[in-house]
Image (cartoon, rainbow, N blue to C red):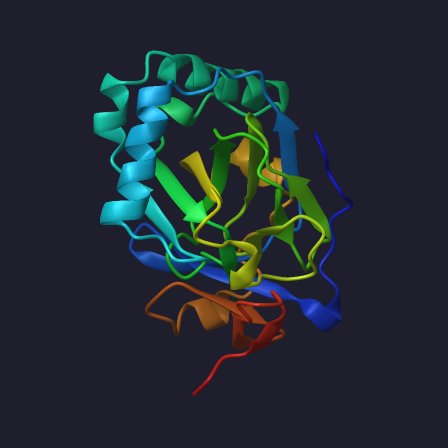
Length: 247
C-alpha cells in the first residue's frame, strides 16, 4: 500500500462538484492513491481468447481507448471470478474500509493504454477501485499530478479519486504515445472496476477528502465538473497536464 502525504496548494487547488442526491455538492480532489498487488489466478485461456476477439473485432480498440466488456458473459467462463472479488474485498478491509464492494456497481473494462483524463465529470461522487487481470505488458498506471507510477501486473489493485488525472502509458515513457501500443503486439489490459461512494465516511477519510469547500459555486452548477484554481479545467491527453477548458 502506498499513501502519500496529502495537500492541495493554493497554486493547484482542485475542486470536484458532484451530484449528491438531487443537489450539487463540492469537495476536494484527493491526491492519495492506495495500491497493492494481490494473489489472484490468471483468467482461463478461453476467457482471454474471448476478450481478445471482443477487443479486436467488436470494440476495435485504438491506442488510448477504454471500453466496457460484457461482464455477464464472462461469468460463465470465469470460475475464479468470486475469488478475485473476494481478494479485493479482503484488501479493502485491511485498509480499514467498510465492506462496500457488494453494494457497488462493478464493470469489466479493457484498454490499449489510456490517454490521460479524469472521470470527475461523470463519476464525481465516486472513487474507482480497479483490479488488473492481465500479465505484465510493460505498462504503468500514471498519475502525473501526484507522481504515482504503478506497474500493471496481474493482481495490481488501486483505489483513487475519479477527479485525479491518470493514464496508462508505456513503462519508461514520460507521457502517452499511440506508437507505444502497436497493432501487432498484445497491449490490451483488462480490469474490473468498482465505483466506491466518496461520501462513505471511511472512504472519505482514507482519501482525505474535504467536503463542501465551495458551496456557493456548487449552488450555481447543473452538472458535475472539476475545477482548478477556481475555473473549469481539462487535461491534456498526451502529457496529463491541466489546462484551461476551452470556451
